[in-house]
Length: 321
Image (cartoon, rainbow, N blue to C red; front, top):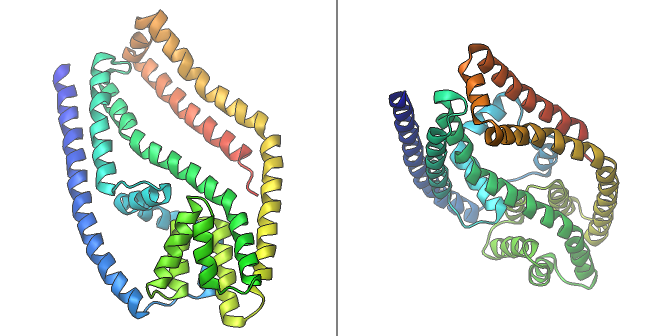
C-alpha cells in the first residue's frame, strides 16, 4: 500500500523539478528577447494605434482556444501576475515555491489518507497552488488600490495641464505627488518616456502593467487627442467624473448583493467544516466511506457538486458595472 504512494510522490516531485528547469530556460530566453524589444522600442519601430486599444477594451480576456493556449504558457502568465501584484519575485521563484509546497501536502496525505492512495496527490496539488493564490490575492488588492487612486490622478493631471504644464511634466508631477502604488506606475511611465520611448509605446506598457479598463480609456483618450487634437484637460476631468460615478454605482450593487455573497460563503465553508468535525469526532467514518466503491462515487459527486454550486452562485452575484 505504501509503495504506490511513494511512486506517486517521486513522480510528482520529478514533474515539479522538470517544470522548474523548463521555467528557468524560458526565463533566460525571455530576458534575451526583452533586450531586443528594448532596442526596437528605442528606435521607434513599433506602432500602436488607438483603434487597436479600443478593440482590446471589448476583448479584454481571451476566450476559446486563445484562452486555452494562454493558460499553457504558465511562466509568462506568472511573470505578468507577479509584476501586477507589485512583488519582486521571478517566475522561477514562484515555480520553486509551488514545487516545495507539494512536499507538506504529500506528507500530510500519508498520515491522513482520507480518500485512500489518492490523498497525497490531491493534497500536493492543493498545497502547490497556495503560492500562486497568494500572488493572485496581492494582485487583486493592488489593482483595487490602483483603481481607487486613478480618478484622483486624472484630476491632478487635468489641473496641472490647465495651469500650463506640458503633459510629460504633468506625468512627472503625478508620480511625485500621488501615493504608491499608482505613483510608482506613473513614475515608470514618465521615466520610460523620458528615456526616449515614444508616447504610444510608453502608454501601451503602462496599460500592460495596470490592466484596468479605466487605464485603457485614459490611454485611448491621450492617443486620440494626440492624433486629432482637443482639450485634453477637459477630457481627463470628464473621465474622472465617469469613473467616480461608476464607483458609486458599484458600491450600491455590492450592498445589494451582500446577502448572496454571504450565502455563497456559508454554503462553501459548511461542508468543509462538517468534514473537519467528522474527522475529529469519528475518525473512521469517512475512511470507511472512502473504502467503499459506492462511497468513492458519492465523495466525487459531492466535490463536483460543491464546485459547480460555488461557480454558479459566483456567476449570479458577480454583477459587472
